[in-house]
Image (cartoon, rainbow, N blue to C red):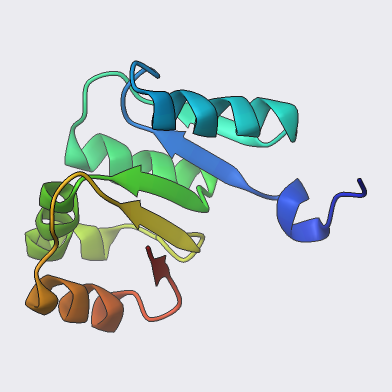
Length: 112
């Protein structure tokens, strides 16, 4: 299968090592497609935001509390997060207000 330009520039972030099946599968996909995989150990919001900026991360999977923390954090304005294309959010419900706030703050990012 031929790779598109979008696939060639994808960079996926994992904030924990792949102990659960979904994160393991996602990490394996990154390796199989020769995408950049950015692995963080212990989660810390500023560290994650710096990594998104530095490595031009395009895809991030995170829990709803992290989405809420991004929205509440003033420091998120200090980072260049324009590379983000997709944020996968799961494990718990994300409130309608948080979804609305996220899409207003990051209008070009798909929140799935």
